[in-house]
Length: 475
Image 1 (cartoon, helix red, strand yellow):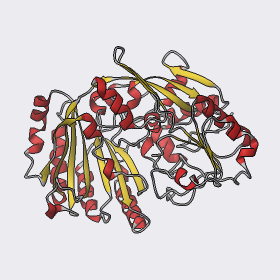
Image 2 (cartoon, rainbow, N blue to C red):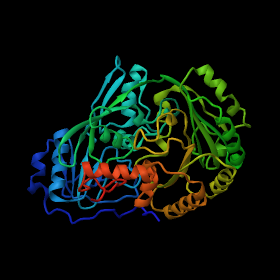
Image 3 (cartoon, rainbow, N blue to C red):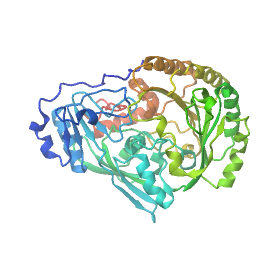
Image 4 (tube, rainbow, N blue to C red):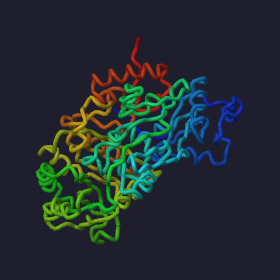
């Protein structure tokens, strides 16, 4: 069973007596925050409020030199070492007890070249910040569904989002990375320079070093997309999912959708009599010609009378921010995820039944439709696994705080377990602290062996271990 998030951690060590006396503070241009500082408790907060850990120091890196200083210090002292950009790691791996956190949130540089359609982006950038810059030129990097997610962590795990079926994963846009190694060196990786490392960072997470800057290919998107939710009574979930299964079999790659189940939020766009009641939602994002998009969506709009139809032409940035209120900072979150080949009758019936067990008004879970451009990149071309998967379930239990959280966790685990025989894999960014075997499952045995060999070359001492860790291959 995976570890329940809370006050624990996966890597403990005794705190330093005084990190300022061992030279780290003097080596930084940025700030070093310790438990003695008045802003410490705020500084140690991350997105998942159920994670409560107390690092000995947080180094706010002002540039690459600070990142190198933090890496060299962690390597020399042997303290636990976590890396944080957006802090959205589901199990809270961007924080540690008694060790050092290298915080990259001040590395905010974004440089767009509209002629070459490329972007150079530093590791502290959030998705919404990147969208703000790229949409000025009618361009985008496919990336995520919540704008306050950190670009770095999302990219290194793969990067699914609203543009993936047309343009692919976030890693499929990656041209190069600049990376600080476990020895405190600085290298570039691309198809032509350190190509094995470049293969590994495209899906292998932060196991091989700290990426300080990404170079992406940009794609034409927007500024207007046809997007938003269409909402039905959750009592119609099974019938809706069967219709949805047949409908998406023929939709063009320009359409990405996700089915979401939850209790209706008290929003003015939703009739008041539905507030708090279970609903089934299909969220759409069409990025092509708007008239063609209306033709593609017409069968969905005609599926029974909806509670509300909020799918319309809107700026891409507006759609990207739509789910932000559903996933705010400091809420308590717990996830279990899996990939599956298709929505079988059994999956549909179990899903429709388990929806009735949602207690928290904050719990929601998406079922992402994959395929399209994702599957047109070879399975072995990047470390990411699951190119041929049909759907990703991301079952999320959420509460405002500890009250009711244990019940939501049990609901998540029971739902996930009921569908075990349909699991074909798992998206590594959606894993909690679930153990080595689950990480191996995320990559498959052959790819996992290759990743372990790569880890041995670039981080033989496993300095970068507070992540979905790939241990170095043994001699």
